[in-house]
Amino acid sequence: MILAIAGREIRSALVTPPWWVLLTAQQIVLAWIFLQVIETFSQRGDEQRLASLTQELCLNLFGFAAVPIMFAAPILAMRMLSAEFRDGTYDLLASAPISPGTILFGKFIALQLLIAPLFLLPLANITLLMDSAQLDWGQIAAATVGLGCAALFFGAVALYASSRTDQPGAAVLTALGILLLFSVIGRAEALTTQELSLFGWLAWNEHLFWFLLGTVRLSDVVYFGVFALFFLTLAHRSLVNRRFG
Image (tube, rainbow, N blue to C red; front, side, top):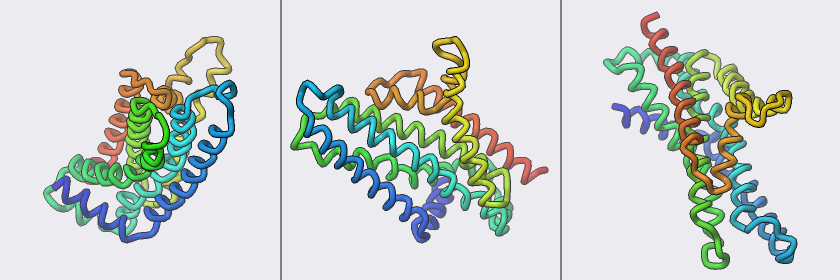
């Protein structure tokens, strides 16, 4: 049943414009960044290169890709729950002998599969250099894993926001508000005298940065996993309250 729900959501998304527009727009911008990095790097002499080509590509391509994904997740998630609440189609689904957890998990899988091409685009661009440049594929793999972990977090927040309201626009704004808070909260550590404050630890981009450098730390994986599970738990509670409240 989980796969059936996921398949339904994916088919529905692929026949509507938003997913294709997001994918196309991201690839256009990534291709421009990719060419700019290659051109800039090739024009520098060895003494002017402060970082390897791999690091330049990871920081620029993967670092940029996280931002459009952060905006894409709420847009894709709003129709999975919030729009169904508004249209009344969720009530039909909830009336079937299916638990809220099954419904939520199916939609979460669908959302991650729809986001997957977005966070794999940087890798697809870099593979064009496979035969023409020496690259650190370990660092590239770490950056890809990190972007995938961030996508899990974005998707969980987006589904939670979508589960809270029957207004898709409000769901998008709520999700973006939460994600932007987690993006800028690290700036608050400048107000403290501590080298590593709680605010810095809460910022998702601080954890993604280590992946982009090629370092897969257990603490960073746990961070994304814990917060994804936390927001999915809140979303599940919202669906349970809607059914039995």
